[in-house]
Length: 347
Image 1: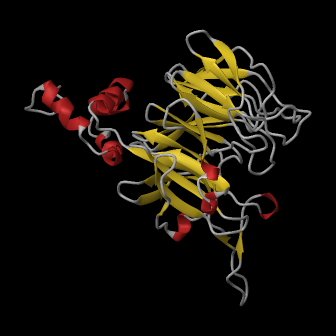
Image 2: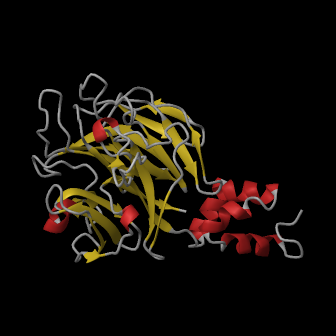
Image 3: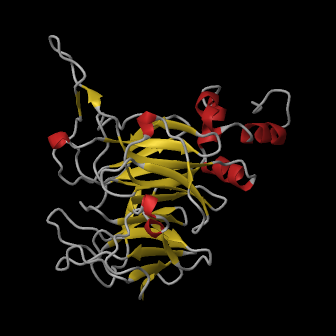
């Protein structure tokens, strides 16, 4: 069966390559061959090489309050479904080209909000949500979920090897790398693992030289960096050092003075213009100096969110490069909540 009746195979493939990612879900229902093609890794790589992929920001964001049920003559009251009135979180998608905002369907296992402090990364056009705390009990979990933008559905992957929170994560060479964080007893960790999405399996790596809780992961070149963090006995005293894992040698290398002492690196680390150093987006401007989250959107553009002080309205800005001016963007009310963390996805 031809991809498109009456057209040569190569022309049919190019036609499908040019389909907007937003209609892949509909296109996958045309026939089994289209479905298999659109979901394949080879098609993703072909679209990327042809320059037909698209960068989106994926944000872990607090959800709007849920209106409480009215009783008698009362009304107007709102509530948050989290423990003790804490906000619940969902995943927001922002397209900087079209200016569109949308929210992904909930993870079936957690219909009222994703696990608290979970990690979000993207691998070859798919979104991976892992770890965090159960939003009801606040107990650490090992769940891992994968969102397929073609089918617009979540599926469950192999669980994390152990319970850990506030760990570093990043994607390198098509695999997810995680390291550090702390276990369910609040002990800081120096262990590290990789996750192969295609084979749905975890493999243990060499350990870092020291414990690193509340660290941040980022990729520089062909190295996985674990930035700052602190040991069990030094709660909240963020280090200036980092450790980088080199694919070629399979070993960790310690990097001194890579970060500002005492500064939390969570969600605000970027790569400098030289492609070798680290950037702290929380130091870019006082408008985003607190609760900073930065997500790269391609073409040197970053989405940066944050506030001037705790309790201030969340600010949303586009920034060109690491030192550009903040350009405020308009955000619909339902997408104006606090952004805990995020990642970029190319689909």
